[in-house]
Each structure stands twice: as C-alpha cells, then as structure tokens.
Image (tube, rainbow, N blue to C red; front, side, top):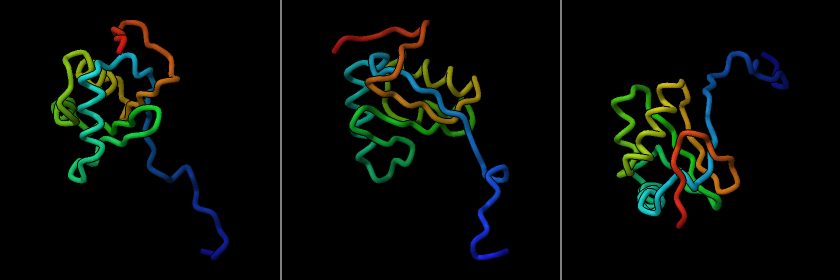
Length: 105
C-alpha cells in the first residue's frame, strides 16, 4: 500500500447513533451521567458541554450497567439498543422523541 493511499471507508467498522434532547433525562440522571463521565473506570459515558454521549454495549442485558439511571432513562437506552443503535447522544439542542417523557430541571 502506498504511503499516500487512503483507507477504504467501506471497510471501517461503523455503528448507528440516535440523538435526543437532554430534557428526556431527570436531574438525577444528569448527575449520575456526570459522575460516570468523570470516572476513569467507565468507558461508556462521555460528558460534553451540551450533554452526554453513551456507548451502548452489545446485548440488552448490559444496558443497565451504563450508569445508575432512572427507569425512564433505562427505557430509552433499552429502546435504543433494541432498535440497533450502539450510541445515544443526549444533547440540549437535539430534538424530543415522541413517546418519551420530558423533565424540567
């Protein structure tokens, strides 16, 4: 392979992500995700200025291990995992998703 050749993007591993507003999180979820993002042992939650990116482990049974989250947030992660998403982005400027509750905090 030439030193200047570009890798074939079709051969790269990819996965789908879904974005939604942080309003779908309770304040307690936000606090739990902040703690998880700061924990060097947790490699599934990344904190951002506008929210969080959560990588979903393969298998629905592992979704609960992401962080200590409310039933509503766990429902979102389970829904995303069952729909084939491997990441959920909670962002304060992302859209609401019909069918999930919203919280004002």
